Image 1 (cartoon, rainbow, N blue to C red):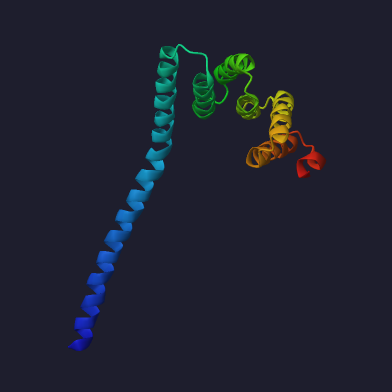
Image 2 (cartoon, rainbow, N blue to C red):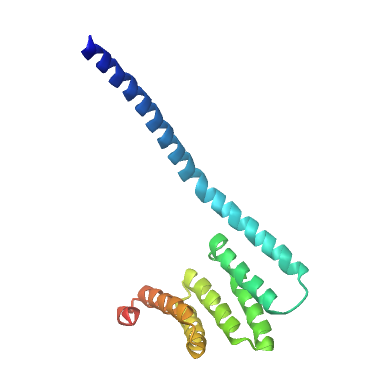
Length: 167
């Protein structure tokens, strides 16, 4: 009798485990299917809200430059082959030149280089990130120097320049 009672316990437990495993797999499948669409939709909302905020912001100051950088970064995710982000970076560079804030200029250049890299405009990306790197080195911004060096390595690697990508 005890053997049968133990057997039925394991049989019932096995059914519950199978049921919960199916539920977990179903959840994972739904999550995997829905997540890319939601993140793309979220990126689109982010671009739309940044664009709306930018249109309402009249001043040409560091806040506007940061908004333009954020808009470029969001556009890279939503429209990776679009030149809109680069146009926003160029607009930001014009403002930064008037303001004379060198670190902010380097931030714009880095963002632009990242966009150019995404579009496989490697020669332009290389020269742009080198400009950003030079400014960061003058300002001794270690974390930003590291980011530039990483992007340089990626660009050199894509250009099949393995010697420079290792440096």
